[in-house]
Each structure stands twice: as C-alpha cells, then as structure tokens.
Length: 66
Image (tube, rainbow, N blue to C red; front, side, top):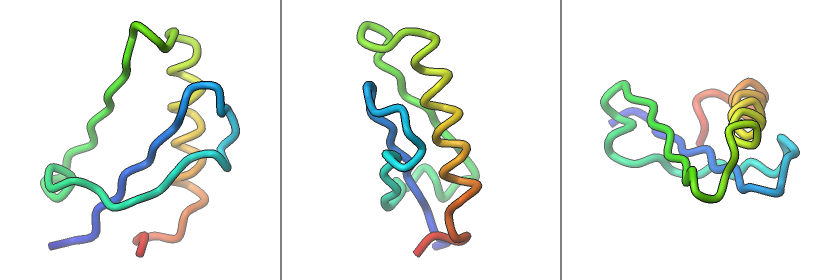
C-alpha cells in the first residue's frame, strides 16, 4: 500500500508548526482527502486558518512522508 498521511490542526494553535503529521487511515489509500470539522466548536474563520496551516505543512513536509 502507498504511504498515507494524516495532518491534524488543533483549534487555538494557529501556527503551521503546530500541525501534527501522522499515519493516515485506510481511506487515504484510495486517492481521497477528507476533512472533519466540529462546527459547534470551530468557527468558519478558524477552520479556514487551520486549513491554510495544513496546506503549509503539506508544502513543507518531505514527500512522501515516512
């Protein structure tokens, strides 16, 4: 199976360096990117900032991620 990666951003930790990169789930092996947001806790603006930070982490990471 190809490598998989999971990028996790936590509300209140807005820096790209706070993104946790770990092993992805089986769904990631199917050419899928999924995004889960707890809309009761995260505002639209916070979600967009977190998505931008994940984008920066993907850009900065070694690829493929080991």
